[in-house]
Amino acid sequence: MTIIADSLQEIQVKIHTALRSANRQDTLQLLAVSKAQTADKLREAYLSGQRLFGENYLQEAICKQEQLADLNIEWHFIGPIQSNKTQLIAQHFDWVHSVDRLKIAQRLSDARPSKLAPLNICIQINSSFEDTKSGADLAEVTTLATAINQLPNLKLRGLMSIPAPASDYDKQRAQFKIVSDTFNSLKRQGFIIDTLSIGMSNDYVAAIHEGATIIRIGSALFGERKVSTT
Ligand SMILES: *Cc1c(COP(=O)(O)O)cnc(C)c1O
Image (cartoon, rainbow, N blue to C red; front, side):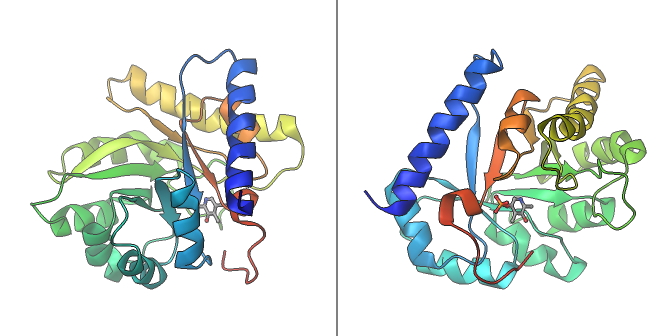
């Protein structure tokens, strides 16, 4: 087995253990975060069974998509979005996890080609209460979700968050609980959503205990990134 196949299997085992200890009967999806990885690495992960890949940088992603056009990959955009990138993002991805304002959502909907299925959207929320972090404020989430639901070429799927890094498990859980509570509150308000995109290499076990349905794993799968591109 290759190193990537090994890591993938190791992560799957940890996911199953966490689901069981959280008494969860459902499953979750593993999004392989492939920023700064070569197309060959993605192909290797694909050959080991991985189908969902997440990218942060548009040009880098499009370049890999061209090299991997023969594979049946589901592409997720998870990086910060500038307005001038919305057209290409709407054309090249199946999901966008990092929508944090209405203007971006409107532009994505306007640019989504009609021959493609609606673009799946997660609202990125700022759960760390830091001014510098991207993400919508908790107080704005209901308004933003309502507006996104009215856009014809988008399908609101749920919430995404990147809490401040914490090494302490309880602190990780507490931060994810804020996101999970917000997600459940939207559901109680009647929103039909099914996706809670939380958890990365260092905190995905905590995220699984707080109800993650997609975890976004980079370094635990591909190894440490050589160039820091975050
Ligand atoms: C880089 C990145 C990840 C993966 O981080 P790792 O710690 O390498 O698992 C997940 N989500 C987002 C939004 C990222 O930018």
